[in-house]
Image 1 (cartoon, rainbow, N blue to C red):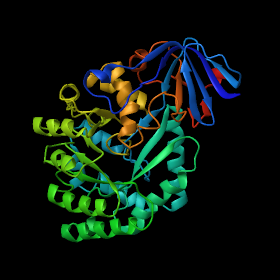
Image 2 (image 1 turned 180 degrees about the horizontal axis):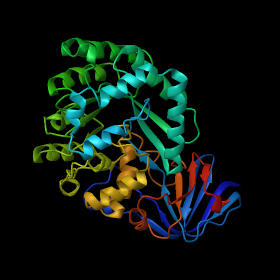
Image 3 (image 1 turned 120 degrees about the horizontal axis):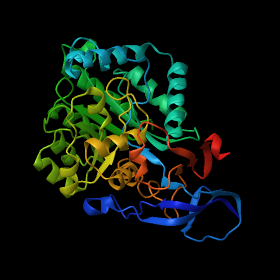
Image 4 (image 1 turned 180 degrees about the vertical axis):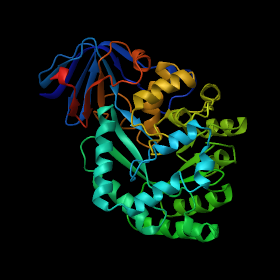
Length: 413
């Protein structure tokens, strides 16, 4: 007997793929109209249009759209405090680097996070996991980077490790000690880089992080500093991610390709050569439209050029207290369609199957195929194109994680 049988979906959006989708394939969703899907033992065991088997639970999805769970492949989920006052500064024209140089921005969150005790950080992070899940996210990449010393970076990563047993979302841990240089090292950058290298060596001895990330940007880290850090990370068994091109093109994209990064994230500023090299290596470009939207820069990543160049793109929230305080992948999809000119289909693929490849999990999540993990969401709309159309609201009726229903609306009871 099946555990769950979903029947009669208006659209069963499979996002079927043999790898990260690029070019025209990014616009293909492989939809089964009136589709059925069967779940047993946490896996998808059948996909079709007329599955006739007994099940412990049958869900009538008539008039609904069924999708893979969203994969939010770039977040800063663990932190303390908030920075709502900085929104007023931004409205009045202050930019990101001005706020950072005055002691605000990342450094302000570092101070709050260092002061926070472990249970406080863990409770806040778990609440955010539940909120993301309510909005349809079933896998979340989580970066450190608000500790910026050994004790507090390890505290953040231990919070992530402890939360990995939650049933709402799978968490993917990333070490981001190279976020910015902390105040105590402001006159000696080289010493802080050496401190990061020591942290990485410690991580090589305990499985607290899967990836190492570096923020390559003015006011953060140079290409040469990032190369030294990422080489050490790779030698210690960590995989590579990179923040690059958020406010300027400093050569971070080319470094990311050189270092065989799984993904290079932001890309608001990226050269034609950088796009060409990413396409050649099939490096995932993670686009974060919530950031320029919240910062009101008006400068979005050139998504159409990236797609035309053959770069496999993904979408993510970049959830954090300063530049993008949202956990809704639905809102990110709406922004990507409006400001980056992605189609609904492209944005959905970028938020599911391609985002899964951005965390090296494309072989088991991100699509609705036989044998894949049963991470599924049911939207209370009959057509996938309504997902970006109805913006700023939650269209998710049910969330299924690892074959278990972990969230359902009152109307679905």
